[in-house]
Length: 274
Image 1 (spheres, one colour):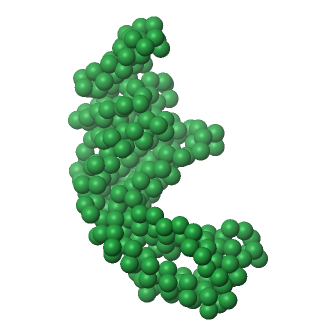
Image 2 (tube, rainbow, N blue to C red; image 1 turned 120 degrees about the vertical axis):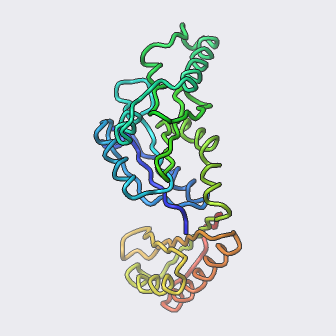
Image 3 (cartoon, rainbow, N blue to C red; image 1 turned 60 degrees about the horizontal axis):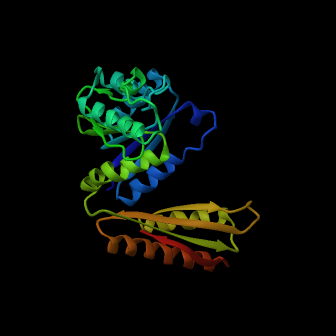
């Protein structure tokens, strides 16, 4: 069974619809391909109490990993680490390793002529204040380090909200940690498109196939209104190796295809990934 994970995305811009939450989509996809499972994605605003509450609620569900995105920068509304510290009932403190990372980045910016001075102003030092016991994760793209800390059996990872920075830290420092836990687990997915049947007719067919193939999840995605006959069916599974995963999905694919064709529908594969 895939190890459970949760994601908490922080930012008022997400709650008011100004920014599309592409970080959540990207993380969920990467987590799945690594053989783990994102069980819940939560969005909260730039509020210490809201962040703390979301973290505490996640802790109660005891995920193996908890990832936050956003709120690590130098401005007043970057409050993720403060919220995380409150949830863990610990203090924020200047982490010397993180401070060195921040200092070196501003020195580099000054050398490149991007800024006039590399001095460590309070807003810049703020990015090096981590919850007690936490460690920084190198940010190869931006300035604010990512953060990793342990709480019981939960590994907590705080990543920046800027997508390029989030992805760089994840691929550079986080993916390997997740893969160690996932082991040889492999995620496999495949989609087919059906025409000539409507979704309500396929509902009992999906239920039957999932009953016969308990390790495969099938989700229908209508591409138009009920009367417009075009539906995507997405199959996915996580197994101990790619061979088992492909075999599971292929078996379910064949069974559902045959049932839909018996109803007069037509099938075509549209995607296969692993």
